[in-house]
Length: 280
Image (cartoon, rainbow, N blue to C red; front, side, top):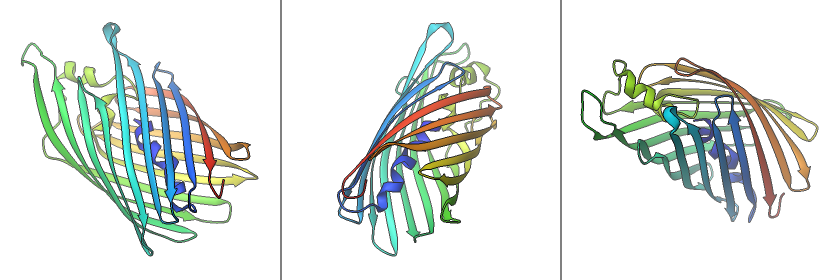
């Protein structure tokens, strides 16, 4: 789910801000498969070395037979810079309590300079999967874990150009392959907001950003592989961020997903960001 992975990025830039700075982001996204998502994220600087952040997001997708799926995401994190390294820890919840939910613990250790940031990332996810009754099995609940290890790097190539790379690989303690159970696969797979999109084997991203005057253009490319069926998804998003006031920006995003699971989907997003404190 794109908003799940993107929400922390709204706040990371503020982690190095000066004392008492804050940022609040509000966003909405819609796609050509009738999926809708909304989010709010905020961060607050305590002194010059500590940054608190929180985010809440939800999406709604219409399933077959008139059923509606509402999914919730929420996280709370703290970032502490010790110089020459920093540590970020966070706790998150994601899912639908009637089908699939996850409680996550996230940690990063990073170092940074004016032009370069390098982080090692760790994620532990506790899943609970509610399997519906089928003609072969009764309804049941499965608990399982996943551990992810990854790396994130960001380089300020020139004064106006930046490049970021990130990758995460997950290891599950159970075999999730359900290729032969098409009914179960159809329950989890219906759009780019599908629950199954959280169960990935790996995820990789590349971002290229260019400043043009007071505005910022960014191209995001990502690729992932599903743990359940091995399907691959590719995504490309073009973002445009520009000021709309002395302490606020607006960002428009237009992108396309191409997935072995749900085909090709286009999407559009709008985010508003508000800044405050000593350095708007």
